[in-house]
Length: 305
Image: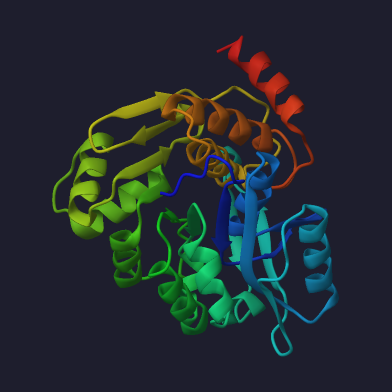
């Protein structure tokens, strides 16, 4: 990963931008866009490579990105396909399920030469698995993975839009893998014929795919960050959950922001846990806030851990 002491740190996020449709409201979403939003809150120069439709929904998303000071120059406009939509449905234990509309504009992110330099110059490049469901966006991602110096795989498995072969390829490319406990328990069965503890499973994946860093989020059980030789765990903050949409994305954004700012893993985990809980206690993946509000929330919650 690059370190820039005199320049503002830059992170490029790649993938879906869309609208999350709830029973009573509609909110902006898409894991990569959520990450970009929260990175910008931490003072990171965040960029979004994606594609929207030439429709009112797409115009609103582009206006939002501009309002958030996230450049829209790398967001393509599709004349054929509509802006992405996801129906979010709340289930047991505050977990969300998603109905993801197919053939959305973000399925057709075309390769542009300007992206090569943008990604090569970034401190980190964030991507997920969902954008690989269509070969056009997948081919563009594969090209950009060859340009990136530090690759962050926020796995975000959404059935049926992934394959073992694609996930295996992406695991081989990443430097930092972020996944939740259920995703870890699933993917380990694809590659390992034994049953082990969480740490044993992570160590197997690190060794098998040469991944230096892994983050496992565990909801109310907190989260653990693994390097090749150490691990750092942090408990979850207790909050009244409004919805869990985007809480994992915000967790990653806070951790990554502190990492590219050369903070310690412990500091990264503190901020990540705080922001993940803060977002879960609000509606939508991108609630309005500033750093002072997050710090107040963090101090209040730490006092009752």
